[in-house]
Image (tube, rainbow, N blue to C red; front, side, top):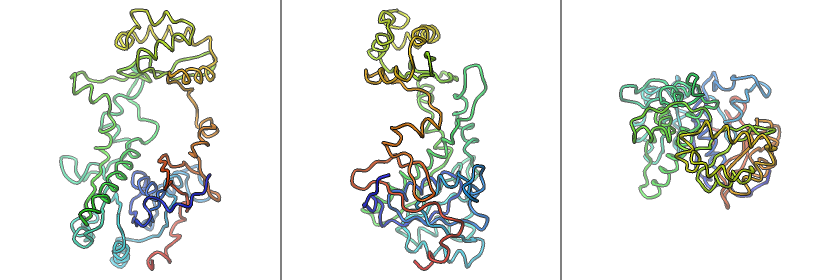
Length: 377
């Protein structure tokens, strides 16, 4: 991992992270990677994810470790007035506070959004909630898998003849964490002109709906209810997993010229002239026949080397890798997507800035590690 002297694009920004579990910590880790000073405040029982294992590194679950680098950590029992006074002292010098308390919790403590806005007019307050504060579902707790179910994502995920399936990673939490980052950066940028902070309202429900593309766009245009298509794309073909002579290969052929190149490289250029396959529309209408024809040709090829040749020719393709193969892949290391310090290893930042790149300065904090030093900062 390269060492960068840059202090980071967000150097000088102080973030108080009151969030727990995934979307909030993911958001604040991104801010920390890019130079923000992040202070993670945990309740006396700790962030739940410290115990979400195995696997563990010492007493701390890998789940927590993956979301909480570049932060200093302290413990406050915000049910106690004296501890809330410590938080208010921290907020006096903060630019951003991120929280995902149940809606109404901060208000009950006398430090809700209106009070914070009045007391700290430059503060950017980001709340991550399940459904927002109001409306038919306002104030209800939200969890990634539940939002996957309610947002329509599960209804379009899985094989055509199978049940709805939860996506294998918490895409709603991760996406909402990214939206929180975007909202915070927009608010900080606007503050440069107005001198005032603002409230950033991010909800998992909204984040889940935003990911429903192109199925939601298709439905709004056609009125036809989307169905599960497995690995196949509802609008494009060939766009699916295909068997080769060795490994499974994903082909993502987006236009007719790419399809012609594919057929030529597979040794049967006349396949592109078949009226069933000549256009994307006809290929999508005849996707089963197309898959059979392509796999007859693909069976004669070694998948990894074929993927290299296809990509070099401008035909998007890639072998289906497992996590170990991904970690060991030379391009993963070239892109610095596995990073480390001391006994820590984690996922590198995908945001590459030329002058102020991400840096990895602090491993995830031990529980209450910085309790003594932070209140005096």
